[in-house]
Image 1 (tube, rainbow, N blue to C red):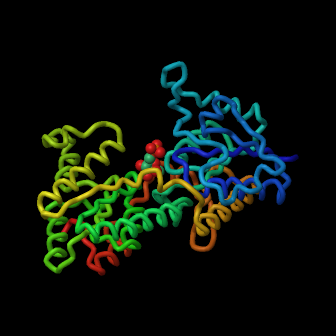
Image 2 (image 1 turned 180 degrees about the horizontal axis):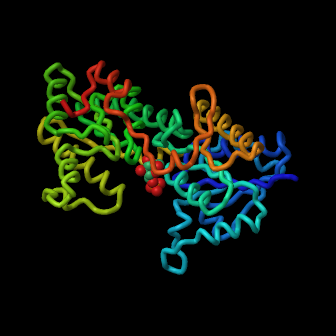
Image 3 (image 1 turned 90 degrees about the vertical axis):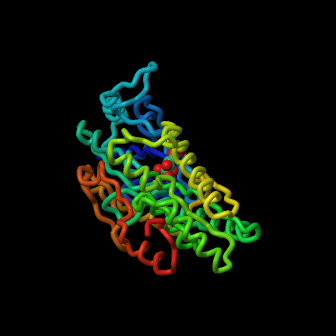
Length: 366
Ligand code: F6P
């Protein structure tokens, strides 16, 4: 009997999502003769039973498009705001899955999506997921799609900031996305030749960062680029968090609950402290959602297509409950139970870190 597959995209959008939708959809339809239904706006759309057909030409011409033709949201099946209240809507999602006569739901998303897909698996649904995020922090896969494009954008930004920092003899602190992982700041920092790279996995000491910049100044290099991951944290704040956050210093009290404000506040404070301690003017650039926009890189298009078609193969074999992970040149299914709840952060002794140290980049720690 013909299988019917639903596809949704969930979490923050990411370049390569449309390439992945196309990969799953075209392989399912033309290779295996399955029916495909698009679910709009992630798990919210499944709860509200908002679908769109993905037949005919809908999957043509989307390979190079940024964003997601399906729309996305950060909603969780078990915690959805309905009628002004947070409610567990898992049963409604399950009912709509059956109402659409789905044989499998393919979920494209990052760490949160893997957890939500596992919940649906536990509720009895057949699910297959793909790892998507510019943060590259999904466990058990070599890489996630979206990361390469964002890496290129952030690197290009650092290149451009170099010439203006150089002309004005300034420090430019550039904040790069990545949530709790430093992959993007580390990669772009290395590729863009940042003088200092600060990542969440290696808490920094402002005095050490300042020394690195002053040493450059003494050598006649009167500008510096500091690539700071949005989750980067000072040793002092880290220690305070480890101690349960009870003994936060006065400055930490101005930190607000919204993550992007927490990040921005830390970044601005760092720039201010560096300006005070080095005597060089400092400016801040927050790259923000620019890093997620626009057309995917060639590498992301290839990766998304590989993962998408591999998902179709798994669906055909009725091998459900797994994420399709990239491993070298091939792909492997990984049980959702193993990937959900894990975050792939940068090991502090990762070869990228060692290489950056090798070319004299400071991580603000020693
Ligand atoms: O997970 C991707 C990501 O872009 C993170 O790097 C960032 O912290 C977050 O999403 C921003 O989320 P939002 O788009 O909801 O502001």
